[in-house]
Length: 113
Length: 113
Image (cartoon, helix red, strand yellow):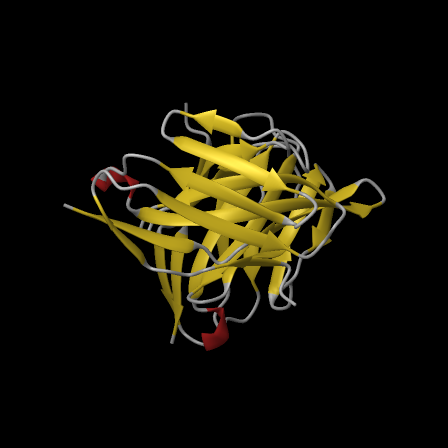
C-alpha cells in the first residue's frame, strides 16, 4: 500500500542546475499537485493536474515545469535552480480536486547553493 | 487580509490539558474545511474534516462558524503524541469546475510531561 511515493528525499544542487522531482501514486487519483513549504510561509501550490494530459499553474509556478502523461506520475522539473528554490517540496494527490483527503508524499528537502 | 489565518503558537500545555485552536478565513464562499496534522519534518496528514454541525473524533472536536468565518479544533486530555503543528485548510470553489485549497501556516502544539 504505497500511496504517494516521492523521490529523492534530499537533494543538493548548484545554481543553474536542473533536476526532476519524481512523484507517483497508486490510488488511481485524478488530482495531483506539488507544494513547497518554507518557514513562516505555509504550503504554497506550485502546479496541479486534474487528470492525465491536463496541468495548470498554482500560486508560485515560476521556475518549475510539470507534465502528466499518465494518471500515476506527476514529475516536477526545476529548469535552472536558484537559491530561492531552496525549500521542502511535497507532492499530493486526491480522488478528485476538492475531494476530502489530500494524501501527501514524504517530501523532498532541496538545497540550492 | 490573509485568506486563512492561524495563531502560530507555540502552545505549550501539560499532559491531560484541554487546548483549543482557532482559524479564520476570508472567503465567505468557502465550501469545506479540514484540519491537518504535521509532525516535525514529515508530511501533513488529514486529521479531520469540519462540518457545520460540529464533529467529534475521540478526543478531538472540530467546529465551524460560517457567520463569523472561523473554525476551531479542541483537543481534550492532551497526550505527548499530540505534539505537532496543526494546519487549518479551507476549500473554495474558484469557478469553471476548479477548487482552491488554501492552507494556514499552522499552529504548533507542544505537550509537556
